[in-house]
Length: 424
Ligand code: KG4
Ligand code: ZN
Image (cartoon, rainbow, N blue to C red; front, side, top):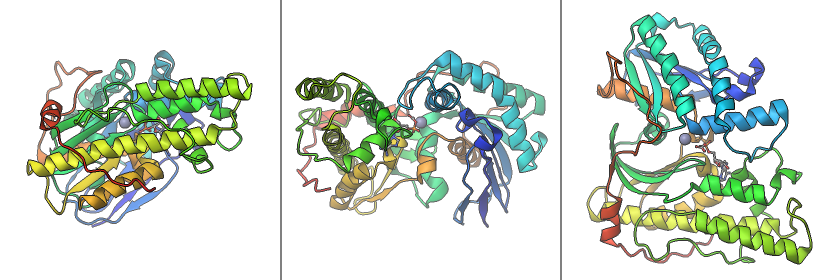
């Protein structure tokens, strides 16, 4: 059995904003799995472990993270009004989604040579995310569901991120997942397709959001080497040229013996440092500091240590409670920030010290994408979980926690994490 993913290049459709407003169409039989979405690269998966399934799924991903990217792409490419470090403009994104969703679905279906009647189900992100975009995706999908009389599979955005690894690697339940992106930050134990224990989450903003804010504050959009990069990528790039020891930012929440995260306090400290440096160097806000690379290196190191420490505690907690195997545990890291190699190395130090295996989906599957939603649909269809034949009363949910929250119990266990040398 083999799988092939054929992807549509949205740039060739002259609609770069649609790269992530993707409708994935997954058709999997005993032969190929076709995934159509708006991105350029062709990917081929050769795994053979995936059970033989005989169905096709159309999935729709419209939540807030993709929306954010689309808006910035749109602004960057069409209006050039703003930078890639800018934020969400919901009405603009909603309008773009509305205008384009039908065409994208039609193109995806025609390119896959699958007619809507051949689909086995339609899977759509309905939670959590930005109400405006969830609404567009849901109402469009329900129209399709009713028109073609298909079962509907509502998808939780984080669940889709967490399960993506099972598309590319042979990973059995249970495993630990760390989701770090511009919109999410959480640690959860994945016990089954829809069986999650939430161990910890960010109490304020997500690490990608913080990196974007720092990059914006450092005006990295004006830096010749970083102007086309996302905030996080720009920080990673610049950090390679800097000295992380030049600034001593303290990792947050050192005394709290739980698996929660926090980034906004640190961001505040960094903002103050930047302001002070601007005064020292005699430059205006908006100009690039000579110490920008050192700041980037120190910021990256500090958040890597923070993320690694919380993850280390989560591994120890799960092992202490026999929730994870003592010698064969798997840590999956996903989300846009997971593509940061420095943070990955920090996590590798932790997994090496705890005899765990660290796995990350390939970068294009780490960030928001339609394939993960389609795959989540495949997993649910196969497990017979959450397949709706009647969509009466179905609503999108802008806020929706993942699984059962046991973070309080994790905090009460107050596990001491041994100090590890973070030589990265
Ligand atoms: O998963 P994603 O595409 O969408 C969200 O859910 O937000 O992640 C985007 C985030 C952005 O905040 C971006 O700055 C960050 O991921 N990011 C990175 C890197 N590449 C993207 N952060 C750190 N290092 C990177 N190399
Ligand atoms: Zn996401």
